[in-house]
Image (cartoon, rainbow, N blue to C red; front, side, top):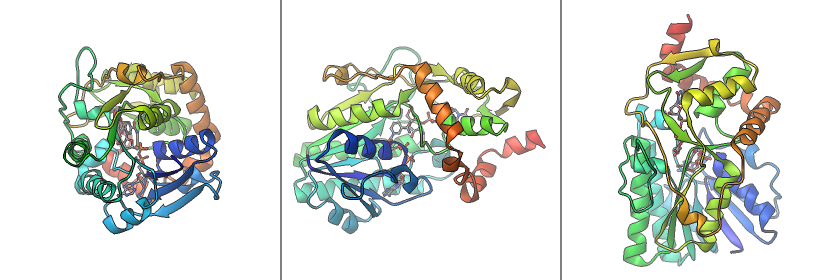
Length: 338
Ligand code: NAD
Ligand code: DAU
């Protein structure tokens, strides 16, 4: 694989994947195709060598532009998505457009061009919530919010193109990913940057004991890369962090690492349809030789330190559209604070 198209490569995990490819494979050229929504950020790829990294501003829902970018690429790895559950609850139009229609365009172009590999980056959220045990790839999916339903729609289209047309599609389902450069709407960077500023942490009341399985971003990238190279077309691979934590425990750790106390916690109304626990079994990917390398304590310490040392990166994000979203999403917070 010499020329790889990465869609959504200016976002959190996509940009980490682009950086990972460029440092791991000296002969790879990355075409980074990203619409630059509110979550896209060229600061995330500013260190990438221009002779091996071509940025194309484009929308996966634009079939013509996407087809042109895919031409001559040996593989496509799709990270492009609307990704925030709370925003999907406010309105899901863009989620359907990108996460379903966009994936359809990728599949159509791959069929036409004979692309050798297509990897769709999906999520453990498509399984829905599980009280005990862990989901395997063979378990039925049961997405329970508009974001995960749209991701499941994209996955199903991808799988149908494998069955019907033989397009070599591989799907990965990753768990909650954390690390540097994550847009501060997701709980970890939101709470970290708020805590650094001594601002309240809006914890969803009733969801404080809900569990997420935390996966360090570079471990997620290695899992995706292995599935891309060694996975079997038509198959799904879970990528699990192996670090299940209740939200309250995560919150306390962030407070501890930023030198703050629990007085910053504000309970706000719970997310509708809030999934209680995500848990997946990654033995299928482990059988190919993958395992997460980052230790939880170390990963948390270095991530929080990164947000402390890189205010230049997140301060300019927490303005404009972000603040409008924040006010809408956390209306209860200002009522509590004022
Ligand atoms: P992100 O929100 O940080 O980035 C998404 C990127 O996609 C942005 O750069 C955005 O500009 C781009 N994009 C959005 N719509 C587009 C379109 N129509 N055309 C082209 N580009 C578009 O997302 P992330 O957290 O890095 O997630 C990346 C992928 O990984 C997503 O597919 C998501 O579903 C999946 N995933 C995320 C997590 C997680 O915890 N963050 C876990 C498992 C799977
Ligand atoms: O599991 C993988 C998924 O993880 C990805 O597919 C999604 O793209 C990604 O956004 C993430 O989804 P979650 O909904 O699990 O992540 P989020 O950071 O939004 O929330 C994590 C937990 O924290 C969840 O139980 C809700 C809670 N939470 C979140 C926010 C934003 C709060 O208590 N308060 C908040 O303000």
